[in-house]
Image 1 (cartoon, rainbow, N blue to C red):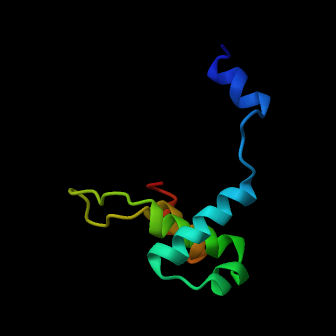
Image 2: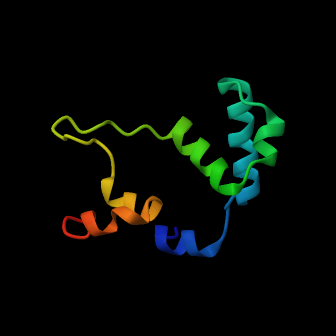
Length: 88
């Protein structure tokens, strides 16, 4: 019997990424009401965002003033870097 490390690096029984994405897209169409055409034409980043929004639910922190990852803001809004460089 192989260890997990041996198995994961062997490539055996590994489903190709495209097959996994097809199954996830089917689930989005059948259960979540998305249009197949819109899923097929969106960028990989947008598809990843939809997948996370629909399938990965994180609980919001209960004791936070701003319950989001504010350290990511300078990536989106570079003008905030001077503010967050001291706390992130």
